[in-house]
Image 1: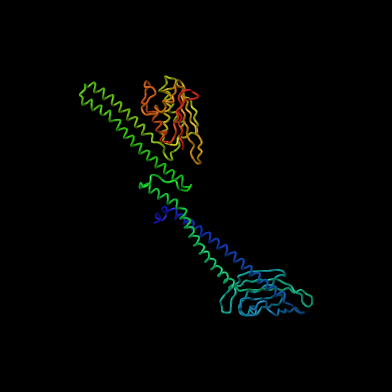
Image 2: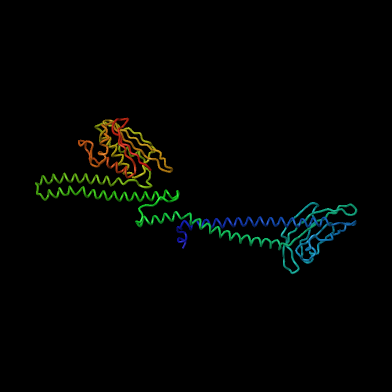
Length: 464
């Protein structure tokens, strides 16, 4: 059950769950803040109202010559004249106490005399009514002083008390309205959120639909009508589709070419067997055809290895592989005494298969060693790309001081099996393998004359 609950959910359900939790937390916080603000406002209003009642009593209260209290004739609120009404007044002083008619019945908190000018506002304070049930009151008190008939100052304190039930009823009414409207607002926002989420995720559903069409063969690739955020995804998928189709086509071509190429040597050997030629001649014919078949198989395997661009390939350091290849070639061509110079950027990286990099460098450098008189120059650098977010392009240049290649023969030399000079040993497929690799990586191969060494210059540019 736990694994089933925590298994990956859809993006829509994830977004809806997180947004709903965030929305509920936000509404709860707003509701709590509004509730506290309304309570503080209501308490402030209550404080002001009780303060006004106390001020009215202070203005209407007098003392006679003996210092006896003369209460005001008319109460500032009719509830003060009705017993147990919930609004109460108390006046206390030195040896005197007075209470409004409303205090008859409930047991109110015992008042204490305050210093002149002192104010208090406290509550809720417990009160016990005549029916035995308890309630609570808010109390405001103010210390005052008055002159008696002899000119003496008489200190006294006025207390106004009000039952909390009207206040709590007001709060409960507000809270019911507040949370009702909050719930309605939450439902409306949740509905808008679902609609917004459905609209914003529509491009992803379109991507899934297009992938299904491609998988079923109803479409050849994904369209380009997608938001910018999904463009890299659809481009990568299309690149993957193109790469797989290119590889499949390459493998089919290799197998077909291999079968077609082997058919002729096999037919020659069959003819020799059927012709009953002398054994020595037969052995010679078989040996020649076997060598030819070995060359064909080697060539086709080399072609099959150049599988082209691989998506998300790890970067490969170019300098180290170049040094290994040059070290081997210097041993093979030691008699020519060729000096290979390096101008390789240490940060140069090849994004692809290691075998492709070795084939590319190996064939270019071997061709240069084969035709050079004494010098070979290898240059590797990273070229910035103009497209935002793209990898920098890799540029590889191999130059020699040999006879060079006329422009008219460039296309011919890049064909399979064609050699620049039949007297030079080789199979004539090295440069064609280079061309296949460059084509597989959607790069460019440029053949020109070296401005520095005077011989041939092969320049390969591999984009991202």
